Image 1: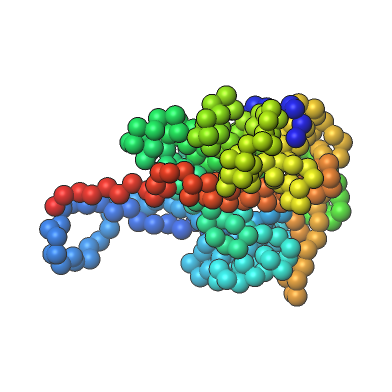
Image 2: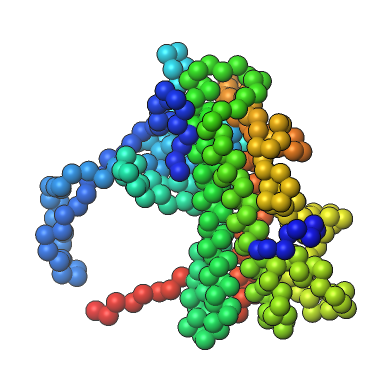
Length: 363
């Protein structure tokens, strides 16, 4: 691991671009409660009053694609249609997953947006793994922090709280990058940008910043995790995975090398390991923060429109090519999923409950 690694929006709006929401808004009546209903009493349906609450449920997909919930299923797009942009509709969720997989893309998260037209819409982001499983590690570590604090384990509680924060922050930055991909794809589709065209624009700067922040937050979560379990072994001066990896006498510490979490992290941060995914995270983070920003490379600054198809379904996707030739969103979604899986494993060794607090109201 490089020694430098010792430290711990909205959619794109191109000039003249309509908001990239070809999508259906579900209007949900807001209820007004007139009085408390006694337990066990029959409830009569009454007219609902006081306006509408607007809500959008979306699945974020690599390449800038989105699937948005409509009244009859999920609408996948954007697609180029006569007269503008459109979407496949409607599709049940299992078919969306099947189509996305056959297109060589993946779902990376769910986004529930309340009051999308409000200046401050509420967005509830849920990371989703490749198999469709919800990745709940940020919530788990929030629960661990609370349980550790109640148990008087204040130092571990503090680090657990930092782990929860940075893991959640990284997810939001991944969502921000996906927003930018979607805006870029929508604009390219609307303007009939040719497939294979490599380009950049002013809005791409926001996309680069999202990846810089994403790499930094994932690095911080990694280091807080290493510090939390190092402290359990009496290594109170270790505050990052890099410091642990370069610690004098490390190989003579089987309690560290064979630790169920620290051992996994040390192996994954070793370039010569069969699966050095934490090494790759460190390299991206160090390159962005210490050597060269993403936009500093001519290749790294370029977006490209590509074509994907399966059976009769044809779509275009957008990619941001980075140094090794891969697509930035796909690469970082994979690393983020690996990080959350590691954090979920670590939660089982935290010594405190990862279950949400149960609030009981006395009757």
